Image (cartoon, rainbow, N blue to C red; front, side, top):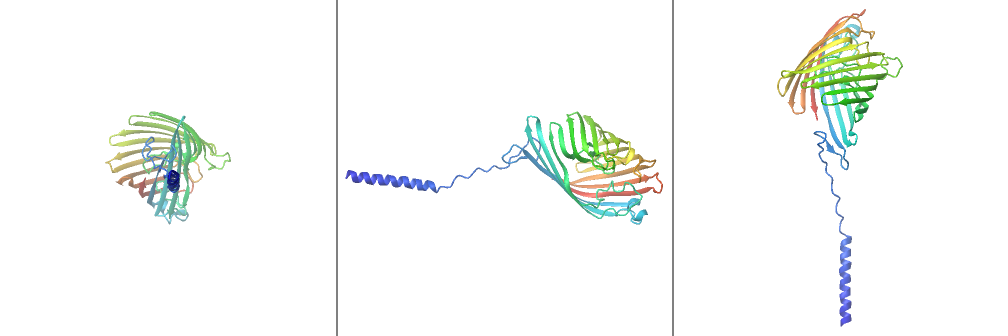
Length: 366
């Protein structure tokens, strides 16, 4: 009897163990915990941690649709030389940016990628006596494009890649002409930036805009500062391809409900940084009417303007206009601009030109 009881007990114990092992074999593994996107507030709003890393990423940009318009000598379709530009044209732009930041022992490591695509309809054709037609009409173009607008690495004040130069920071109004052929290049620069003072030096690959076959090196420098509501900045560039240089000095001051800005430019000869004239003076006042409206009148006088032979002569140019910005809702703005231009030429066979140009733009930022 004892042996029988022992055998039955052993069998029951074995069955229990076997059953437990069988049950363990079919139990599903616990799911891996999901790492949801975390907000990164160390670098401002809009950043989030890339899952599994300590790198913060921000995605932004804007979508723009605009209608450009023009009337007068520069837009006379029956003008000299077979016609001027279109009376009106349309333009759509998609602009997307990716900013990545992370902390290192040398400070914040930043990389930025900006992609842009443009689609034009209509635009200039033929020719006219106007040398600067289209400068105040951002829809005035025919070449559709998709390209890298910016792509650079930044650490401890050093930056390398393709990025906007100091010449890209023109006035907020849309009537001025204070930049050159381009404002973004492949470059290497260092910039010291504090709350009240900044300075920098940049070496830029400008390409070969003037066919002198010396690699298009540009040397660009800047110094500036601010104190309360007053700002100042001086920047200048030397174009080794053109063997010419340009310099801009500007100030800004908060006066009443708006910001007044004044700039002076000098150029030794047409070059990539600035090519419109030997010298120019520009003034604007950005009046903030209320939270939705900003009205910006602007005027520019340029002496010894560039002529058809790409040299400065005794002519001059007046530019006067206004820009109205209206915030429809958050991140959606209507921009309207109109500019009157008077080109008074001093070159054989070139007539003076008087015209009005501008645009109406709808822009959604994100």
